[in-house]
Length: 330
Image (cartoon, rainbow, N blue to C red; front, side, top):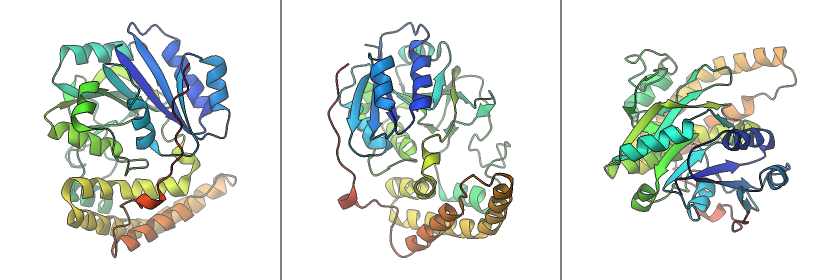
């Protein structure tokens, strides 16, 4: 089998239905399987798959075990030469899978591959990055350089840069990340200390350290809604996102560098918080029914403050969620 497509789902019935439709609705010109790991969805995601996509192999979890752990469950039963991590809020455009597999077949030194990603309005979405470091954190978090397109001003993070040819990069986003089965056997699966956010960067770091190339492949394109599931749990997602670069640096550079990164993020959050609160209140007047992110921002600030005294970015293993169920055959 050429490819195993792994999708993690949590209460994403609508987008999951469209995603699976984009996979099966077009001829992919390769042998593939789809494994969906459902993290205890309360909507009818599983029933929808059983009804409309009976060929999908489903792994049903009793609790939300997180993105990394859920993907790892699928890795254990994947049969493809390549494994694709695909977000449930994506749509595959024609040729994305076949072109990616052909490129990997022709370039055996490429261990991981990402593609061009676009928003639903077809505007460009950055999906490749450099590895996080302290200087970069200072430049983009304490200075207003986090979203500028100029390569020099954003410290060479590729932000807004649209490569026209396959390009070697440090990290490709986990919304579409193809990895060789040999790479997973070589460097191991995703690090389950990451519940969501940051696991793709840490994994790409291990892949690159093992001597494999990581390539951004713009000849394949997908559409990505972006943060569909995480937007439903704003507070938890906000804390996970703000702590993910600290945990990545702890894994890659050690406790001292991680502590310094947390201090940088604490100061940056405190400096920007007043402006964020004003913008949140302004948005609230325009959309009164929308949930305000104020509590999530304050909780993120408090978490960074606690990190000055103890490494709160390291997960408490004793509280790790459990409850996985083995795959249900199609």
